[in-house]
Length: 634
Image (cartoon, rainbow, N blue to C red):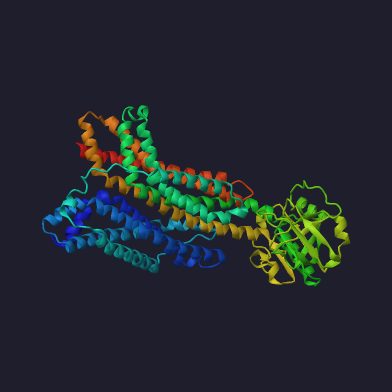
């Protein structure tokens, strides 16, 4: 038998241990390959949305590759620790340290090469399905099956390099200083887990503080609080699994009524050791799962923006003429002709915006000029858009700051204008958005009709709104007047314009592309998190076998064994996921400040989907673990 054949047989002999690692690696390769197929597919290289989707997938490739590197490194280091006794036997029979490192290197390369082959093969088989899903989410024509040699070459080169570097690293991970220590590695009695009361309290304080800050975040405070809350949550989570969870188990052990009841003495005692031994793994599973939940949940909740979009664009087509050129008459007629061609019923409303020069203000972001609208014009626009006005008509010098987005946060400001030495205090904002922020210089005011009549402006602009009940039908209209549906204020053109159907469609395509990328990355993270748990279970299988064999000798039945294992596995599987759910719930609570509508429904569906997947994964692993445990106990 040659040395490579010996390494190959070693992999086959340890196939039970390597199975999850191999399948998770192959899954990562498959997703990486599918992304590469999208990047090199000639059918999605046209259009802004498609180009953006390609950029997102290139970013996803980097994220996944970075994650895969640490995933494989952690997995290999875990497996090496479980094989120390085997290494000791080989070295006792004359194997040198160089030969041992070569053997481990060859084993890793065999597994890596197999994962690359299986991953690419699975990617080729499922590529058409992913193309169909992507075409549906991106709302583009169906993508034909396309095989790119560049995608294959990129995937093979990327993962072959990754496994090569990791395999070289493993030479430093194999420690063979003492044969005795290698033989005793799996038989040494575990030391009683120690905990620090101070670190346990610190964990509780950090987590509670981060939950409070996330739960009370507003649109203004969210960006300021985000980084401190993330840092506190990560540190608090680490100490939760390494200190607080063990502290709770120790507290349960002191409760005699609970601890001495039936088989609780075995379950609780064993859990204290498992939680302490696997604290870093639980920490990683929790953080990786939280990232997966938040990424998918956040982007799925973006669907709510389609409803919120109607509030930001009162008129389906908004047109503001900045001067008196004849072209505005032609442009408005072209809009009417397009609406007629589309057979869309519509109504129009035209009003004057008076432009004042701002002299001074306590608003540090104050524009140089400001549009002024009468209250009756504001009310008419909202009513034509189907909104209900609850605000009382303004009188005298009463002023409302013009809200230009439903997510805008209000700040009161004073403005003094050059015209007529007029000064106003905008202490309250409008309840609705009458003018999109892209069409004016970010800030405007609504004044009473009486005051509006008496204002002598520096200039005037004419707003014309076209109102229909079918926003989506305006998608793609008037592209020659407003490319991609928008002519913004800062473009210094004779007019500004917004076609809400086109803007809404582009926004949804963008979020759909993000969701597609997040779903695939979330799936890889979720599978990896499950694999971490699988690795640790099988790493401890020999120790568990000895433990349960001893207990069986004093009368432990198969039913009691199943109950103990099920309870322990359930806690190991669901405690990190439960903590990740709680983290995600508070993250979504903070995200809610971005929306005027509730995202609870979309987020609940995502979390429920992950929970169902985790339950199925638990049942599968439990069945395999119990079967293997019973085989070794016979």
